[in-house]
Image (cartoon, rainbow, N blue to C red):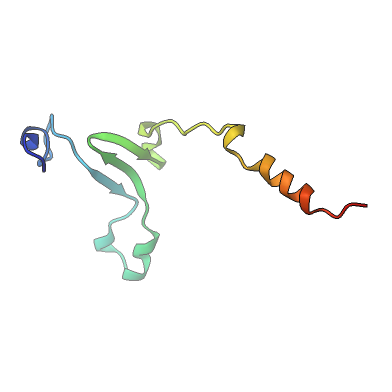
Length: 87
């Protein structure tokens, strides 16, 4: 913890920042081989919800927009055309 953060971090209390997750199952109460199936249903970092699913989906941030600029379709199509045999 950095100097001066004692007032906002270090305890689960009103006014404190927190990093924690809520899991889909209790890993202390399940067989060891099933632990790998556990997922986070809520992730909070610095007191802000950064992921929510299932019953916490409405708390999560909005999904990032997918824009055509970030998709590889144009570059993939150009490579396919370059590799295609010409008649």
